[in-house]
Image 1 (cartoon, rainbow, N blue to C red):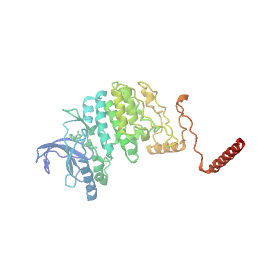
Image 2 (cartoon, rainbow, N blue to C red):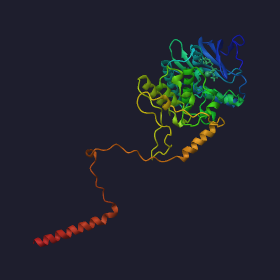
Image 3 (tube, rainbow, N blue to C red):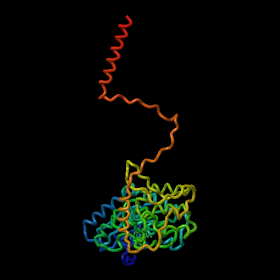
Image 4 (spheres, helix red, strand yellow):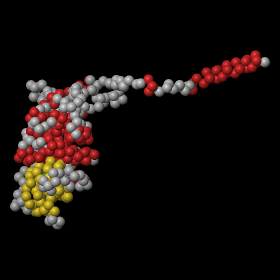
Length: 397
Ligand SMILES: Nc1ncnc2c1ncn2[C@@H]1O[C@H](COP(=O)(O)OP(=O)(O)OP(=O)(O)O)[C@@H](O)[C@H]1O
Ligand SMILES: [Mg+2]
């Protein structure tokens, strides 16, 4: 998009444009002054010709309006919007700082202490959104900012991607569907997204922040042999950047497994593992709970669990794939294949034997109550006892 220069159009409604902060696939962002109250805000201005369908616009406006009640330290507040005017825009809290795309380009790979802070900030924002049924869908370094004065981590565009995509999809721009290299496999194959999609995208964001290289496009990642494993290019992060610990690499492995059933099921799992890293405790690759007879949900994981104990070998924690696999294999085919394998291999696990029980701990046996169908047995016994008592009485005389 061409983007407005402040000289070209210095005012939109009540906002005076001050400076262009950046631009992405669907909009340009300006620092702007809200003239009536003198507040500095960020104005996200969308392409004017995105959509002419009033129904899409009303829906987008309803969704953006609903976002105004979001209140979280790591989510910028939405101040106002107008998506139906000639220049559709959303006015957002201005963050005085730098986005992580610029930071990593300027200063190279980030160290683990900063990465942990980023994981905590974005993880907290995601936990807040996911609890309200909101999924971000476009997590990437350009959508995360580090505020200058406060060191606050801020996640941009929460809820906006979905809301505004309603209008964008109607004009079917090819670059509108998310940022390709950070897309999760389920987005590439057009499946429904959920919280694990955001967790995957955050893991791929860490790849960029750790290596200062873009993740390979998903078409190359289509070489995945086994959807149970993370992509191969994530297996050597701590060799690519020696500042990264094997435990942090293991966490990224648990975030980026191709088959989403094998990823962290929720952000709370990620936050627990971050706490372990901060305390210097070992972290194991996430494994979903083993199925029981009662649940019969999934076959046992075919990836062997990493050994318990400190500093699991990263190579073991994130198994790699053999090279030379045919590039023609599509992600969708692999997912289908995996599901078929899963169906074929589904077996009910016998319950795991429990620990041995000490004899003194065994409860005394409880005598079962007689069943109602055996009432005549009791009557017979009573009659026999009565006859014996009568005979005994007579004999005694
Ligand atoms: N609230 C804000 N405060 C300060 N700067 C912002 C704010 N929102 C966005 N920016 C800056 O503007 C840049 C561009 O944002 P924008 O969301 O338009 O593009 P993008 O994130 O690269 O792409 P996408 O359209 O996929 O979100 C951001 O990377 C950030 O540097
Ligand atoms: Mg953005």
